Image (cartoon, rainbow, N blue to C red; front, side, top):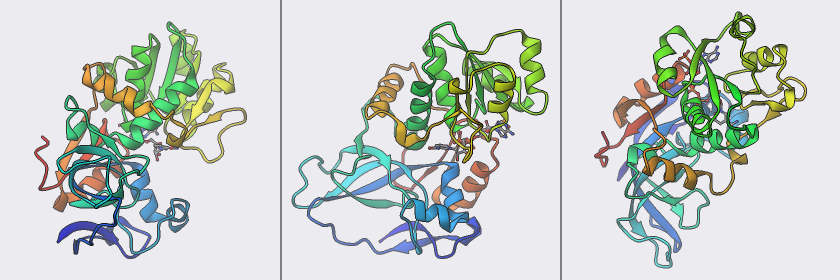
Amino acid sequence: MGSALVLDQFGDTNHLRLARIETRPLLATEVRIGVTVAGLNPVDWQIVESRALATVFGLELPMGFGNDFAGIVVETGPYVRRWSVGDRVFGGARGRAVATSIVLDENHPSLRRTPPTVSDLEAGVLDIAGRTASAVADALSVQPGETVLVGAAGGGVGSILTQLLVRHGANVIGTGSLASTDYIRSLGARPMRYGDELAADIAASNIPIAATADLHGTDTAQAAIRSGVPPHRVVTIEADQPPAGVVRVNGSDASPDALDRLLELISTKSLRIPIAATYTLDQFHLAISHQRSRHVHGKIAISTSLSNAS
Ligand SMILES: NC(=O)c1ccc[n+]([C@@H]2O[C@H](COP(=O)([O-])OP(=O)(O)OC[C@H]3O[C@@H](n4cnc5c(N)ncnc54)[C@H](OP(=O)(O)O)[C@@H]3O)[C@@H](O)[C@H]2O)c1
């Protein structure tokens, strides 16, 4: 027996419940992973609220919750060749990661080995935000010395993207609320407030912006275009209908080695994966409402009873 979040009805995360789940026998090429850490993303609760979005991801009721995970292989099917019991792994399991265990095919495209130099807490929140930040950084194609405006620089995606751009030699202006000023500075960016004054503040700063990543709606994209940034150098990840000429990027656009590159940076302490808070499995409602506040610095993690993550 294990435990997993279960959703029987769309519309509201209050419909989620923590249920006891019977573990099923493995197929020949499947592995059972004891989840130590599950990381949350906005898309997790957006799926709960939208049957249409769930359908896009091939999910149907009853379903689980979450995507990002890290853990340990605890059982292997008889034909499994890639993995052994005890291997540390991480990845994405759409609509089921918040559980004490999950079953994946051994060749599931997002199943990866966790290097010894990377903690489960870091690996367990990496799949969506890491791939998305990496895809946005690639799409921005920034030259060292250029100034990049990042809208929502302190969020899950923004915290990784900002550090990647700074590492690449860009000057980053990161938008956030007043409460995020110090945090955005800690990522290596110059903080700027989001809101109606953004275009005026950009003009007052007298800094020519070469490129922009908007990670929250389209306000930053629009302010950047008004400030003279060519639309083809403006990237959004959230807008269904971005302003004309703006580049829309998804995590699925990440290059196949994106996560390996991030693991390397984490291993060498060149990239921090900031964790805003870690909750236990039975505190899942708190974890989700924290994530849902849209004012998170970095990532929210849920640790299971298997976890020794801190
Ligand atoms: N297309 C894709 O593949 C893809 C992948 C990942 C994420 N996304 C989407 O991209 C968005 C960002 O993801 P995330 O994981 O980074 O989310 P997140 O962690 O929830 O983002 C939180 C950040 O948003 C900032 N923020 C809140 N209100 C804002 C506003 N009005 N203007 C600018 N920034 C604001 C907050 O700053 P303060 O705390 O300072 O207010 C906070 O730092 C989500 O909507 C998500 O669904 C899309």
